[in-house]
Image 1 (cartoon, rainbow, N blue to C red):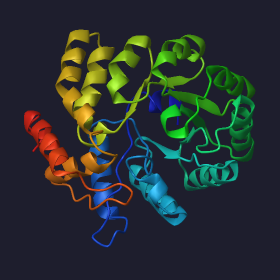
Image 2: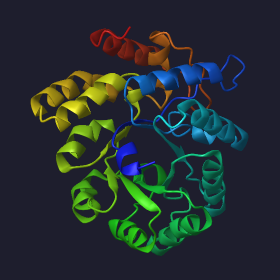
Image 3: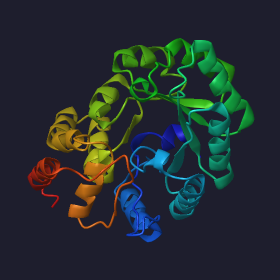
Image 4: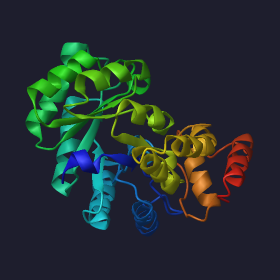
Length: 295
């Protein structure tokens, strides 16, 4: 699969539905996954933030990725979130993703231990040397507590061809990232709120949370921009911005699961420490869904 094409456009950090007994709801998952593909998304990222990765077991990781790869059947790229707190765990999860048949893995910097620049380089290189799978570097200083410096990213890209993409979570560094590495690897902005900004800078697209709910409008936004209809892309962006904002009203994926439930999907519950939306949160999401005529 040509990842330059596959990772271009709208990706979705897709949700994991659960049964009333808190088990993976495979049938509803596949129904939602097929709908995302029909709506035109380019790639999916199962069992990451929206899928409650860190509240899931290794067995569930295997199961969800295997079901995803089988259901997708090559229609879009399947990227897996393999980043964990230790290098050993990250290697194991990246190896599982490769064994199952995923197209690439996302790896953010190890959280809690806060390694320095040299430690970060060694961490990523250890994964690259242990597992033969394309790696998407992900700078997430908010979650990890440290920055993944652009100098380290460039050093990694120079060292090994498996580093094929970089999701830049530090918006202040996005312009420099595109300038220094945009011709060599795929660059993505932090999320869909920065999608229009990223397209203007020349990034490939974005991996999204709200794409679980509005994949079609986001795909149409990218299409309009690429066809030179910049005013149309801005209108679409302004229309869906309230939803892009509201999915973060309380910890992910509470608002996403609530919204999907209001739209008729059977997404099930949440795993602590994520809890159902408050009454105020539900009212706020309902207003946006009504505004966009989604429920």
